[in-house]
Length: 125
Image (cartoon, one colour):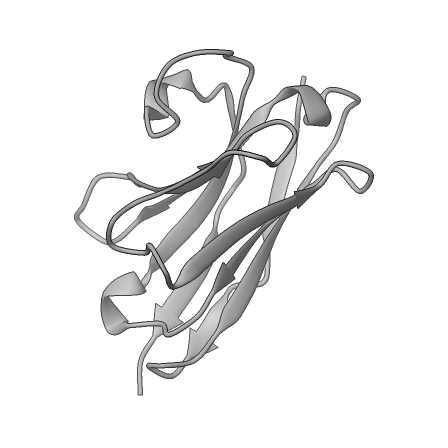
């Protein structure tokens, strides 16, 4: 069993930055891919980005490429999402997910076994 807890969300002005954290319980964190997804009101949950077990492989959605950066600290069982140059369209609840799969697309929501409760990010002036 893995429990994930996101933090770091809040209200930020357009062009601002936020860093989200996702802390995982259990001893299997380093053996799991980690992903970030987001869900805006009235929309489906969409892929934001993901990081491989060792951190050497990173994948991002086109909408956030160059603005968002994912990293992980396996010693702290934590994955981060640094968000820069935020836009109003980035407003959503952000979720982290953990996947035990060794193959398949990083962006496939169905491959993530565990989810956090989400943290709200609002970009508004």
